[in-house]
Length: 192
Image (cartoon, rainbow, N blue to C red; front, side):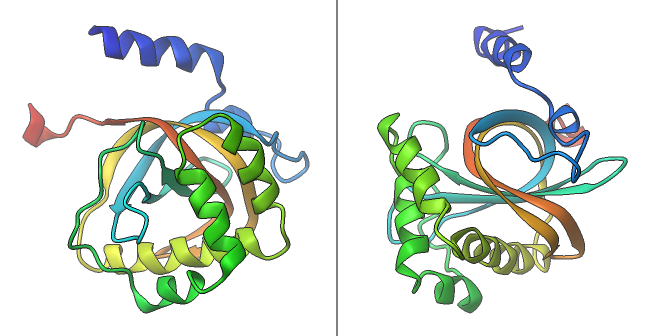
């Protein structure tokens, strides 16, 4: 085990898995802000005006529910998005919503003081719905042309959105909105 792997394993011991976090959904509200780790089929999207911003969308299928992911990465914890990415029209429409864009900008800033401001921005009525619409539009475009990357992620959760939410060919019971702490690619046969 490398030092990086050991560090991730240590963090995993401190935060719940998505199965633990969502064990009593929808009877019990999810703790926000919080942190969680999970296995996710993930797509990455760049192409935002703010070069620090990368969107990750994906799905985790649990025995009792499907969790959708809407994760906005900051410069510290993600690789830069592809410069040539273009956002679908549905995503561009969401970016006309100034309150949604404000939440995105806060999520993209790598500074602890922005966490509280991001949570406040996400609490404005309609903002989580707008970000979920953005994630849905982007995810659908990816699904038609590429295969998701199987990943293990750790992420801070700042908000969630009740489903059902259409995420490509899947319907999510709940969408978690946050920012990645780490993203580790799962090994595939091609990697071996």
